[in-house]
Length: 57
Image (cartoon, rainbow, N blue to C red):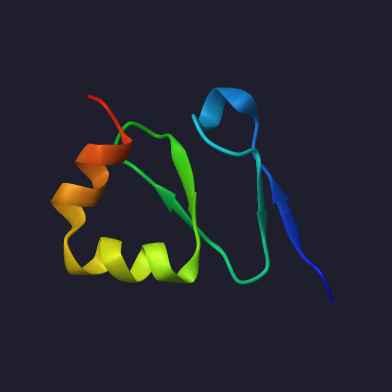
């Protein structure tokens, strides 16, 4: 079974769809970001550095 989540443009600065096997993270600013499995592993090892590269305050 395929699963697709569609995000509204005002809730993400990235891609508008996430699919089965991808991860959605909601940041403190209420924005969402889609990650693949490799990226989520990097994020969990060093959350401050990865978040800083991706989201501007």
